[in-house]
Image 1 (cartoon, one colour):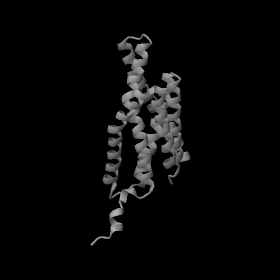
Image 2 (tube, rainbow, N blue to C red; image 1 turned 60 degrees about the vertical axis):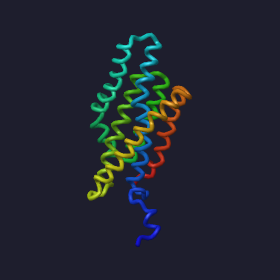
Image 3 (cartoon, rainbow, N blue to C red; image 1 turned 45 degrees about the vertical axis):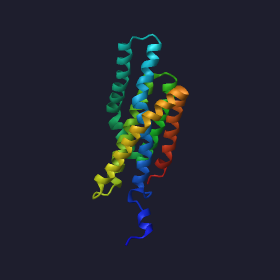
Image 4 (cartoon, rainbow, N blue to C red; image 1 turned 180 degrees about the vertical axis):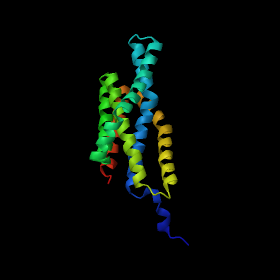
Length: 195
């Protein structure tokens, strides 16, 4: 018969390096679900209110997201060199700081510059994330551990647009960006606790 202590122990919730990564990446996934679904709508609305045609507004927003990928492609090798030299914790931290700068620039309406920082933030995060996951996961449980990460990301992707939409309607753009900044700052805690 099992003791009651065994039922309280959930292996993937022990506070090891992967749990900290799951917490930080879930908070970040929540922010990206805010961003990915609602920021294009906010940008389109802003451009249309400024008198732009719908087609031009849509092409500009799509161009911003393409610009993000171009930035990631251009800076990949220097970024890999920096993370290799200074470490994963540094790379994660820089990623989150760049994401905070992205939100600030969005509020200042410096769209193209903001998306440069968004591309840099994504590049740093995903390189560090995959390297950290591979080096800290148990090779026999890697599928299980990747499944937990995917499930948490999907859960964030379901809940965040609802919460983000409510924040946008209730508190406007400033409340929307404020909540995103708060979540990014909260994700710095687990990042700073990484090995």
